[in-house]
Image (cartoon, rainbow, N blue to C red; front, side, top):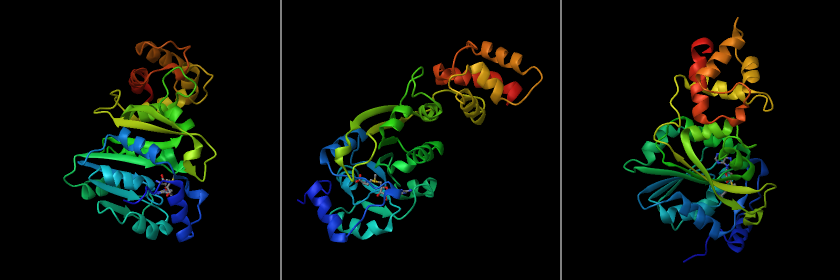
Length: 292
Ligand code: SAM
């Protein structure tokens, strides 16, 4: 049996063999610790019935773990220079397909059912390129794709914001955008030393499991997210002030907002960062008739 790709020695061998140089602009920080990889796959709850989607296989460090533990792996890689390398490093595995595509451009609605036909359980597992973590996660959640969820490595600072609870400094529109669709938890804090080259920021692994239904049922989803954006536009201001600034002008605007806040059972002096997703839902529904 060959040594794991993700050992420092084997990674250096592979990089030297192909004269590969890292592109910082593509967020290329490769994992060189098999233990971390074992933990990531463990948190994903993979079985031989699972289809795994990877974003950015690099030289295949995580890909080979996914290949061993799932039924089939589809990996999206933007950097064509990695293709000959992946063909070599992943040659022991016949259940991996690498697609030369920017994940943000990929037509996942079609690709997932096509590549995973007959597979019920699909998980996204990735060590994400840090320059695009948020757009990737939102793309995977917003289109109601047939996936169970994702276990992804990203900047710790972003993980903190995603998994934050109301009333904390990290809680904001990103926390709500993601917790609306998923239950979010940080499952691992990861030191810089497990990457080559080492990134400038600390890292964490989060697990997002999709809810059967969104966390709150609202009359108008787009208006709900608009209300949230307005409520956080100036964090130190009260919900009343932010809404008064953000909502379109109306004759009795302030009175109407106060009335909606009262209907939703929210004190006008509270700040947006203290409102739960459910409270934002009630508020958005109460504001909708006048401001939607
Ligand atoms: N999975 C490998 C590992 O853990 O060692 C590499 C992870 S590295 C942090 C991110 C990978 O994503 C790189 O291979 C990079 O080329 C790729 N990548 C960057 N932007 C991408 C995009 N928009 N779509 C697909 N892959 C991308």
